[in-house]
Image (cartoon, rainbow, N blue to C red; front, side):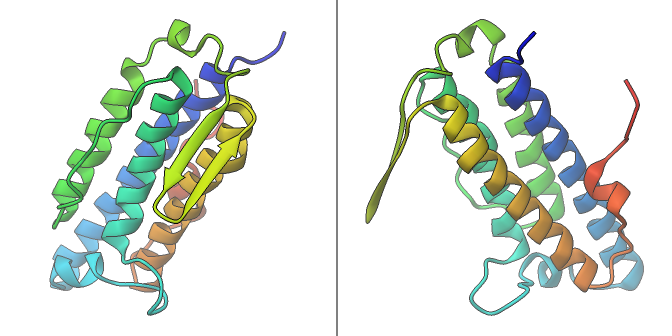
Length: 172
């Protein structure tokens, strides 16, 4: 039996969002216990030309909600990108997860054969079908930016381990 595009996207994205929320909670707790202004952590970058922690989280959210929206053939919801605290970033993750969960399996019908086109100011990207879009763009971006958020907090001294990033294994 083959896996549906819904099964390959929604549970995977929800897990990534949930695990990122855990990582952010540990970042918030670290800031409180070490008496570090949370804004310092949220503005931290791994390198000057990289996005800060807050933007990394926003991009994970954008990829998750935009990914499923484009797979079901609708316009993605837009969020303001104005989060300035760990709590606001976790609210965004929750809002994104709620949206992703709201996409019914039947809405993904035809996504495996439908072309996906992304238009940017300086470029247009075309994906032959939903599978190419999901596996070649959405999931790599979600994991890249989740990993970078994890790395920023780990670099700042937050006690994180691989299990925080991956989440529970073998349960369920």
